[in-house]
Amino acid sequence: MRLPRRKLGTEKELYAAAIRALMRRALSIHQMRDYLGRHSGDEELISRVIARLREQTYLDDARYAADFARRQVQFRRQGRCRIARELRARGVPDRHIEAALDAAFAAGDESALVRVRLKRHLARIHGAIDQRKTASMYRSLLRAGFPGELIRAELRRALQVAGGSSAGANLDLPDSDTLPDESS
Image (cartoon, rainbow, N blue to C red; front, side):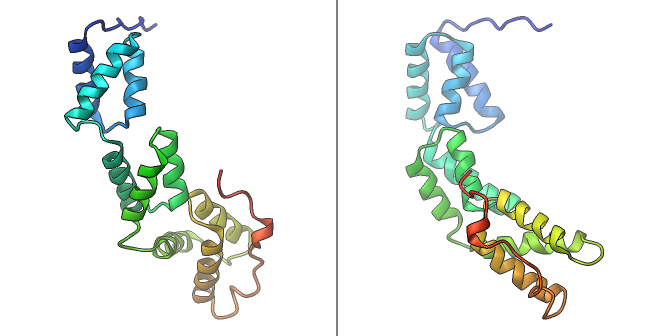
């Protein structure tokens, strides 16, 4: 059984805990406030430490959002919706999220990311590509944060290339009115 943590009572101790947390990984201001709240119950002390960290530019939501979005696009190949959803969950304000997404997707387009993910999916499929496998690829791309319209267009194109010119034409891809809610 784990013993409860000792609450930190001074600004110096709380600041040192914050620096240790930032050495492990980058945090948004909201995440840091939650972290410090678990280590101290004094809201005034937490606000002073966060103000000090912001003043020293150790905490900056705009930079955090830009770095996070760039990493998600570059390494995990995720779409705008998924990245925005994750940043909102981490407490980053919308104005920073939009700027970060615009910067992350400035160099490339989402359709290229969809094509890369589709190529990987199609390489793992054995046998004929039926409706069930197509729906699985569609749901996977939707979860990755790509818009349904883009997924359908790229999926049709990829299936035509993969299975000849008629393979993608006879598969029933979901229409925009039968799609699940993409904002969730």
